Image (cartoon, rainbow, N blue to C red; front, side):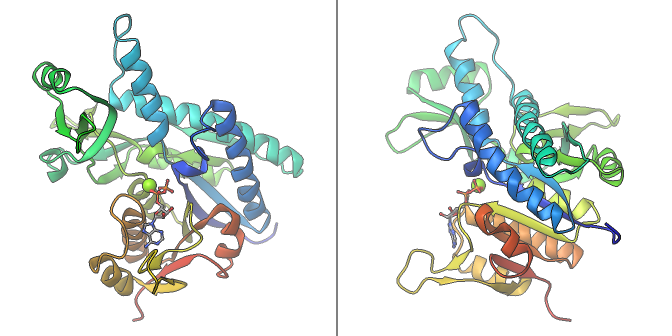
Length: 319
Ligand code: ADP
Ligand code: MG
């Protein structure tokens, strides 16, 4: 290739790995990853360098459940450690699928996963009001013990029982950013900031400590994209486009919207909190910081979306 390839960050949603309730095993996840990586390799053949990031919500749930079931025998796994475990395990699936796809395509490349810490602010307001449900439901008596002994925050969920909630602070800094950029510059295909990154806080002495929190993977992806010389931030999810009046008779799928239009639709409540909402916010954050576009689409439409022929593209406001 003569021209320098353009660089994209691709954030892959959790649903891209766990297709449905019946396909949750590691083998099932690998099959989904193989399909996903075929799209990535197609993009690379179109002249793109791609940095991949991914969700880990279901996989962290599996680890916590195993931890709960074996509590009588084994220690529990702290949340930052769950983040590291899933970054490694999911990263391995991506690496294996990429290496195989490169071989099939006759491309001389290697993929590498970076276990990534992401700094959050210890004073982030999210720590005062944890909202992200994690782990299984439990009876009130057990929940009281957890609150007292472990200092967990627990909430009652409309008759289904009690569940732990943790903070979801905003990502501030990617600790391994320079390592990621060096790998990209040397031609590696990098998988990083899995699950939004392992949340760490820095103390007065400059030391890092893991925290019992989770970072939204859409926000982690936006920070990754904004921290690198990226031309396009791609958010791959279950829908081809975002819509206003979603699932209503007057539903309208969006093609290209400016940051201001995205903010307006967001404030009007068109994008559900916890699903499309964070993606739109992540796109706004990336585009307003870099002036470069972001696109939200599904894996099937990835190549079309990169070419501007599908997906919902969020672009900078006209000057
Ligand atoms: P991911 O695992 O990729 O993060 P999510 O389930 O969190 O996926 O978010 C994607 C989902 O958001 C879509 O499958 C869709 O059902 C839902 N959604 C909510 N509001 C909208 C909207 N306005 N337009 C399109 N999809 C929306
Ligand atoms: Mg999501």
